[in-house]
Length: 191
Image 1 (cartoon, one colour):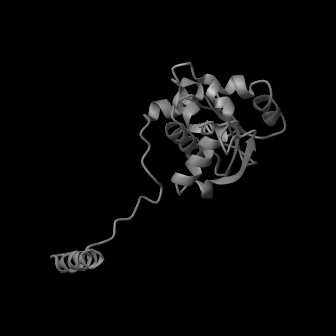
Image 2: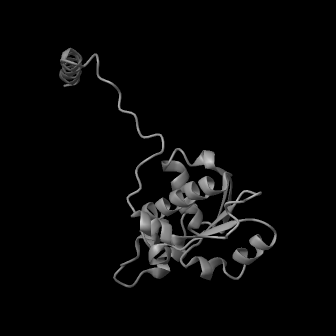
Image 3: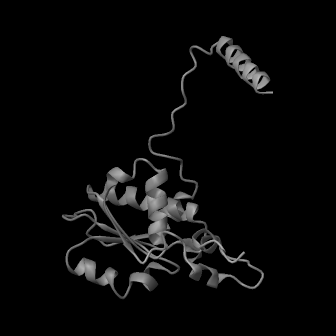
């Protein structure tokens, strides 16, 4: 059986290498910026709010990425007030579904925010998030290769990098959960 498999593999390799155009085939390169954003531009723009000093920034601006809440609910009483007061330009995201949506989609808002902030300020961006906000940031940094060069620091507050049991609290008895809850929940180890 092993010999037949090996002979078949060699035959396929020989046939493919002898195919017309095989020697001139060019490798397919991924877009250096990463995958295209699938969220509508208007939605990306609507989710991002920045202080008026972003364009004239003399310090790296800070992107605040909330957890299961709006930017005002997560940061309105603290960093949205204190950072501008000490001279940091600040932008914040208010994600659709208050952040309960798919983290893969939420990461696109982070990508757009970082690119916009870096372009408008001419500076690198400090990413700062709470709870699962930094998971959106990490996803963005991982899958959009142009992003790390635009970021100076990542500040993570109480982020469940290994998952969390508390994510199951958003689930009902039928185990219907918002996508983000499933994505950050620790696996059930009871069985």
